[in-house]
Length: 203
Image (tube, rainbow, N blue to C red):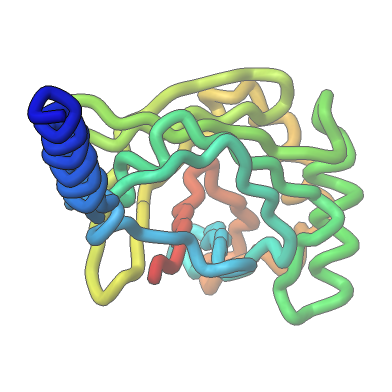
């Protein structure tokens, strides 16, 4: 009987010990989960400024549709946007001037090899932000300035359309807007350089 009682006592101690171990297995929120960022839906924006006349007067516009894919999870914009791809329909071009919009679509984008989309990728390396753009079926990677402030991640750069073999498209839009691109000196000019800016809001 003493042996049987001792056996039950041993099982009882083991059972209590097992229950105590189970109680300690409580999921703990990791630091990554606590500090994770999330992209605000439909917050991605892309704008640009082109230039006309020898005085280099800016003409601004944007794209109202941007598809951002291949994003990741993380606690920084760099971690989330590493390797992210974007696609911009040319049809979403907007300058708040219907005549200008139609001319840009027909006489600039309309003469490029890819008339419908601008594609690209974001990468980060050694603190640098690298933007790859595919335009006129030419792909080019460039370092761009970037900033994260008040939950808004922004990039800014200047692209030279000559790098994308698109000088003929610049000449085409200049011809279509010849009089409108004349400055005080009477010279009509459309610049190859275009300032670009992109932003993504996080929460």
